[in-house]
Length: 189
Image (cartoon, rainbow, N blue to C red; front, side):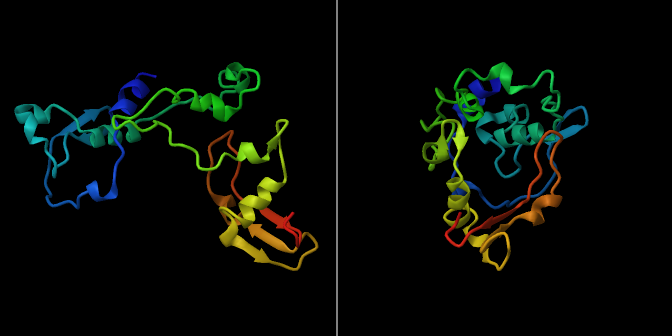
């Protein structure tokens, strides 16, 4: 939690126009932890206001690069230590548990640390803790699958959304595989 307390409050929303094209090349000092080597500064933005201290302070981007390169063991595949039953309170969904860590946080520019949801599917399709079939229809014909819908002549249905091409994508142990064929009737169910 300390990373959340510190980093989220320092973060400000970024805009694509703030990312400058590199103008310089060269070698800068590295910060090394074990097998991970990270530059101590951005060569195009060497933090001149820090004077001699600039080589002692890692930029935020350098810190992110360092974190990306570090080995992270989250114990997701340890079924004795990592179970939802341990953390979920009565009536709480997995999503609710995750979001409760961010509820009271804002970034340095005052925005919510976790972006506002544009569509809460549970409000429309989750009834008595069971997802309704209309969710698949809405996703296929109105949302993320609309560009993949094909009309077919099949014993399974009149329309097909195929994502089996994604079935070869590697997933971590204990995670489901990608890819499925979803068939729909002529009226979209």
